[in-house]
Length: 199
Image (cartoon, rainbow, N blue to C red):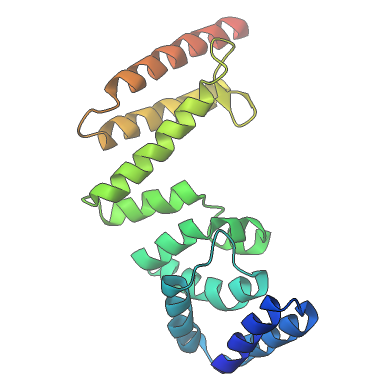
């Protein structure tokens, strides 16, 4: 790998010379000899650079994602964490996202938690994502329970109910017991309502 091309790319981009920057990043990407070199560079890049929410697409697709995919296939925690953090890049490419089974950020975090169920911080992070989802799902109550942009179907309600059970298991300190109980009450009422409409 020829690191000088990446430094040149950054300088060109900082001075607004986009066409030259694109040529420089292309040359940099082509300078990698194998996955091992990509792994060394990607680990350093992800762990030390301020990358924000998205990484330049060709750099992600051709250097970083192959490293993360190889790690994902080996159930490497570092790779799972970075797939979760760079999920916006995945959403920009159907081919990349398909190669990890269209897993969401939460899906990566849940898989990571399954590898290390004693990680207190990760457990709180996953629980927080579930609580956010439940808050969104109930934010138009009493009109209904949402799933995405629409009212939840009976099957989707069952999925939500199963996730509430998972959230209860994650909430080992029972800090959110009241919220979960109230959400379950609304969910049960909504399910009874849509059952009545089907009769």
